Image (tube, rainbow, N blue to C red; front, side, top):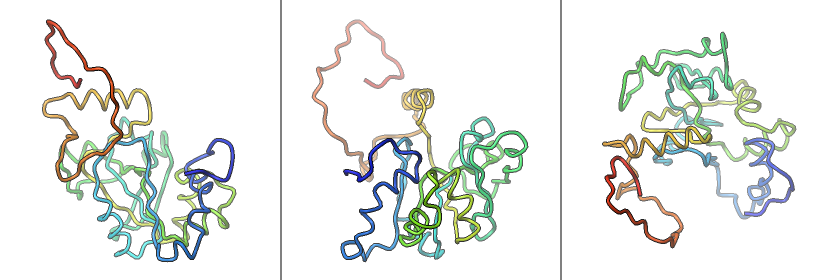
Amino acid sequence: MPGEAAGWFQGTADAVRKFIWVLEDYYKHKAIEHILILSGDQLYRMDYMELVQKHVDDNADITLSCAPVGESRASDYGLVKFDSSGRVIQFSEKPKGAALEEMKVDTSFLNFAIDSPAEYPYIASMGVYVFKRDVLLDLLKSRYAELHDFGSEILPKALHEHNVQAYVFTDYWEDIGTIRSFFDANMALCEQPPKFEFYDPKTPFFTSPRYLPPTKSDKCRIKDAII
C-alpha cells in the first residue's frame, strides 16, 4: 500500500500516521468503527475476533493485547499493570532497575497453558492494539500529532484520558524482532514436541510459493531439524 509521505518511519505510531489517509475517507470507511493494529515481527496464533469482541464488550477506546513474561526479558518490552476490571492503570516502556521492579505483578490469577505463573511476574504489551477509529484519528492527527511511537509516547499518556483495556494472551508468543530471538524461535521449532506447532488444519498459514531446488542429503543423520 503506497504511503503519501517519504522517508523512514520514525516509530510505530508514525508508521500508521503515514497511512492515515486510508482511514480518513469517511464515505468509503464510515462503517468501520474499530481498527486492529498488528506487529509483523512476532510468532503466535491468535483468534483476533476474541480480542476485538472483548474490546467491544468493554466499550474500550483502546485495547492492548498483553502476554506474561519472565524476569530475564521483561525490560525488553512495554510493561502494563491493570485493575480488577481489566483497565490499564500503568504503562512503562522497557523499564530498568527500580522502574522494572515497580511493574512486577502477581500473575497467579491467569490461566497459564504451560509453566508456573511465578516464573512470569510481568505483563508485557505485545504491540497488538485495537482502537476505536475516531480515537485513533484524534490521537494521531490532533492530540499527539508530534509523537511517533505508541509504546513509549502515546499509550502512557492516553491511558489517563481514555478507557484503555488489557486483553491477556497466555498461549505461545515470541517476539522475533532481533537476530538472536529469530534464531532461538527457529531452533525451538525443531524441538520434540515443538513449543509452537505450525501445522493446524483449522488455522493454516498462507504464504507465497518459492520454487527452489530440492535439498539433497547423502549419508547423513539428521535430528531435530527443519529442512
